[in-house]
Image (cartoon, rainbow, N blue to C red; front, side):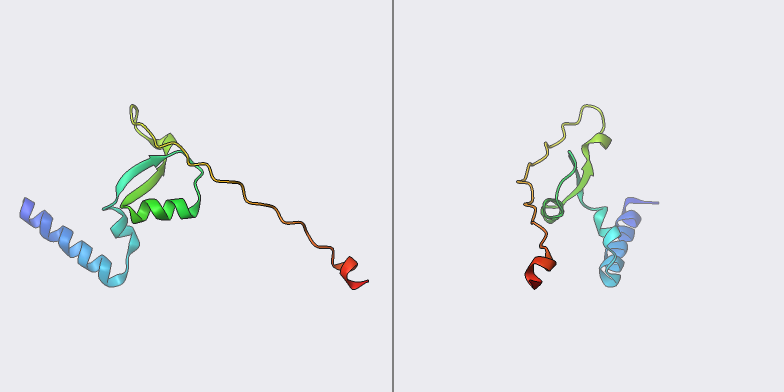
Length: 88
């Protein structure tokens, strides 16, 4: 298969993916970024919007520097309300 045929097939694949809304076909185009997990869904969406596909750093090839995990403030826990106290 020639380079021209490969290019045509890739364009056809992209057009078909856009037509049917296939997100897995589009993911192949994203550059891979190795990040130490866990990260939040918002952080993953941010990387994706920048054109990166996020993969856990433990799967990075040897010699590849992984991006350190971004620490977020822990979510605050809410106290459970006692319904019985409210009824009195």
